[in-house]
Image 1 (cartoon, helix red, strand yellow):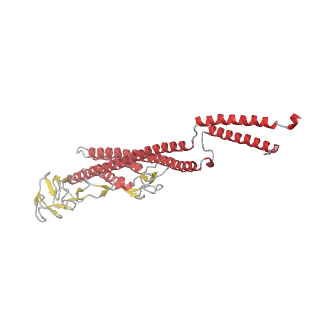
Image 2: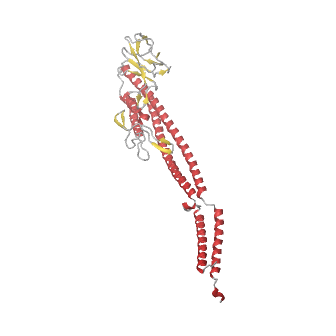
Image 3: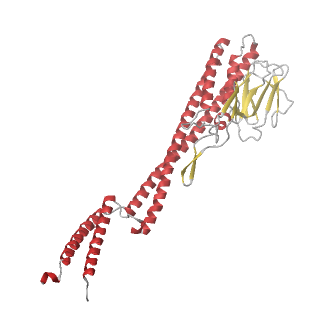
Length: 404
């Protein structure tokens, strides 16, 4: 077969260029640490790497979201802790105010301190997070949740929603709580029933907190009224399911147990004819109203008002203490919910970190370079290039003119 001089040169140049190209490609792999420099190097692996990279980026966003959720929940837990401490302090003030030797001026001084705590409570309820969003306004993060119209009368401006953050492909985490659930939707009394003295009472009767003795009683949440007769040594009880029945006068002794419909209580002191006490189902009472009513009672002088004024103060303080106990329990319940959510966020974050490691390992196995093999290939290709260059030099020197 006849081979022209041009063919010899073309083949020699092509061989040198191919060897140079292979050497440069391997050198680029070594310098970048990547086996795949372009999708054409391994289309299947490149598509898999792209899919895994997208999943990895999404997982990184979830990790960022879990960090935000942890921050928000931690801040709420801190605010709730402050609210709980405030309630305990206010309850201590209420117990102090119940001491009989205190004068009107002493109780007024306590009321001054309580006004400061009242404003502190309002400030905590209107707390904002690091982004300027109100923590207890539901979905309405830019709306101030609690607006005061007068002492103890506070209107909620937010809604009942809980702001959510997506912390995993299948989980959204609530990072806030409605202000009504924390500060206003609190059952008074013992959470089931509450004993109250009528505002119009003039005697010295003071009702103790009602205690549930039989929660299964079908009539436990029926209102029972206790009305004292004339003379007030007996009373009549009216309501559903009571025994003795309506119309039967029941003898009264100060401090004796009064039991109806699965509950019991006692009334101490000397009621007068017409004084009324009720045991009724618990209803919602908010912290602001409870604290505002207590302040008003402590600021109201009772000296010279007789036994009726003293009893009214005692009944008011007892009611406030019960409500503070329920408020504290409610705050602790919300804190427990926040703690549970924080624990779940930590668990999801840990799972996400493990998944991130798995993504990285899988991507590495698909696209990262085997340095031992690459360096061996680089040495071999360098030798092949040098051989091609040397052989081309020898071949291009062949000419018949050299033998003439």
